[in-house]
Image 1: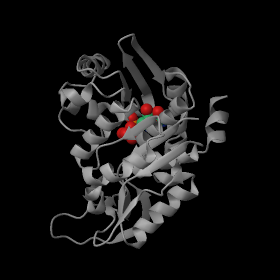
Image 2: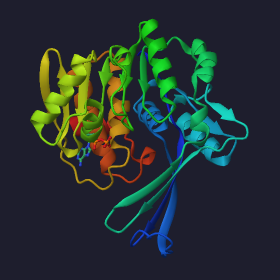
Image 3: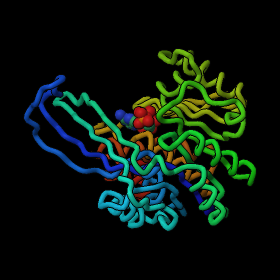
Length: 304
Ligand code: ADP
């Protein structure tokens, strides 16, 4: 199996539940709270590790309990964490998520040590792990570090998967040309392509714009509807797997991790998308992001 390099964020999500969200200056009584390991980079590496990948994660945490917990979770699930940098004087990235009884949420994120996942860190670290074949990267670290990682990967002949989340309004064309696979959800595609994506035609046109900018393949994740694969050869819809959804947090991260795993195993794009759809469907039947990520056997048995 080929090695996957994940470069991205590691966050501790602090989720607080209350009947309703407080207004400005208001205090409401909450019902419960929990700490959940998160950050798109960590979630995707975790998913890949759980699914049996040879995965290595690059990113930064603070010298604190949150950082230690995040690293331990990845390691316990088979991800190489040797190159994650623990930054003195920085706090691990944090997200405070307020959720009401109707599952509406308000989120404040603090990048913390994720801001240190910068070009100097990558310049120092990446040369030690050039034996990877797939780069999986998102946009919760400084954009110039993302672009640097993509440049380096392409120069070394690696395959690049970009999950453009959170989505910028467009990406530089010289970067688009270096992306083999881009995996926006519908709203991320709208921002990236500056095109309305509230219909299937709109989604295909938006994806077509990304292709015309030089991206190899566009895979649009579409929640319970599944995923749409668009490339120069045409497009194909992969129906979502029917499940009783409980919590969709981390579904996209699970999809990306699973997709990378199958491609790294040498499987076709069709097989990889089917596997990713099934893996992500399992993840929405469980609470949490990393806690909801499935094991390989569970995905294979759902697909039978
Ligand atoms: P994100 O979590 O990034 O917003 P999506 O909502 O598009 O991404 O979900 C990613 C993938 O998770 C989908 O392509 C699909 O495979 C799976 N998925 C999400 N929601 C459901 C659902 N309710 N039922 C089955 N599969 C789902």
